[in-house]
Image (tube, rainbow, N blue to C red; front, side):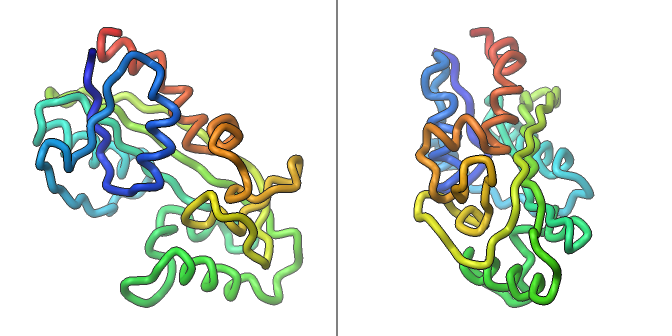
Length: 199
């Protein structure tokens, strides 16, 4: 069975990607399973650049085809912020997901609702030789001032999908894997991923 290395240590992302690719005839490998410890700074100017940096670093270090991703929440009332800096948005070190959500809501105080926005994701798949292919995904919604749901991570508990009346954190894994930005990016990557892995 072809093997694909996931270029992430984020447990929430790992669970989502495993659910999305678990039935594709591909064996997913985590960095810790092969003793690989890499911390790749997200210093790129785009999601694609950050995703590629991760995928390439893990591919070259492991000798295996690797999948990296980068994503962010873009809020219209904040001119697209936090965007690329979604994980580092709170202005204090060692901020938790809850800290980042609280800070985002603080920044939105006094701005008219609805606080529309979207999650965006870019997936990059890289070979050890340096080939990189990309896929994109997005999910539209709005920010709400109260947290709802326990199934997600990051900004999921305050990101409402109006058509469903649910936050991302209230969705089941099956629902999330049909609608989320990361799910859509990975779905869009499936064809070239199979080609690269020879499935």
